[in-house]
Amino acid sequence: MPLAGGQILRPLGGSSQQPLPHPPAIRRAVRTSMLPSGPDWTSRIGIAAAAGFDGLDVEAVDSPVEADEIARAAAQHKLAIESVVCTATARYPLSSADPAIQAKGVAALKTALTAAAMWRAESVVITPAVVDDTTPPIAAWTRSQAVLRDQILPLAGGFKVYVAIEVPADKFILSPAECNRYIDELRSPWIRASLRVCNGSGAATGTPPEWIREVARRLTGLRLNDRHLDPAAGTSEGRNLGDGDVDWQAIRKAMPDAPFLTWVTADLDGGDRAYISDVRVRVDKFLAGFRPGIGPGD
Image 1 (cartoon, one colour):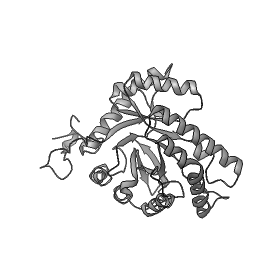
Image 2 (cartoon, rainbow, N blue to C red):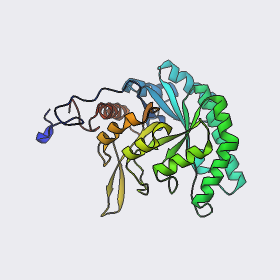
Image 3 (cartoon, rainbow, N blue to C red):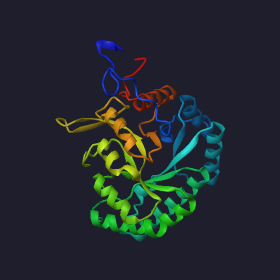
Image 4 (cartoon, helix red, strand yellow):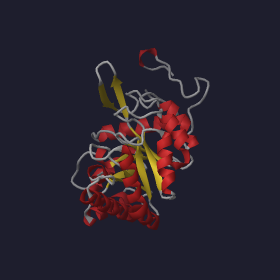
């Protein structure tokens, strides 16, 4: 298939193969923070539905009234709420040496789990720990595990909602082996991993396909983002899917090795209605085995 400039489109495996079939178990979500502002949740979520997404990735809210509004808007547009993001775990780390800060993170995470249960979400995505001047990596590891083991995972099990640690994390859990060890030491079926495909820090080891294959059964979702790195200038710039340096076709090939991977979530900068529709098209191209910015119709 010729493209602009004479480029030839070749699906995974070479030009002799057809595009990969859409994996029937994989559904497509968009993070609600990407949606343009609107007068209410019904209009905002309607943009995701019109674009063709299957579900939503929602930031946790404190207000029961707002939580109910989100639930009703998602139901009206027939979209699942697949995950809840507890951003407070980055501001109030579970690994903090300050008991008051740690308690705020625990309270926020319990609220997020309660909302996730009400929304019938599969998982709550968290920042597992924060490494800083007062919290070296070993302390971040032991403190966060203690909180999860004693205060969070029993509640998650009661709600039947997974706690998904977002990996790689800044200065923490920087390899698939570390991720597996962190999860396995907790000895709970309710702890999983959510892989952020592109990490801006560049400190993580292993490519995204290697993470998918090695984390494997512990992986519950992919968070799709892209970046362009310029080593000479020392810059890292966020890009739309397919416009950066991520090898999307290699990621797609690795996905069957993660049997519990059920969702891919667009996790990018926000934009208008046309942008949200374009992102959904790029997600579909990725799932079909094409680079997201290149595919049928280009």
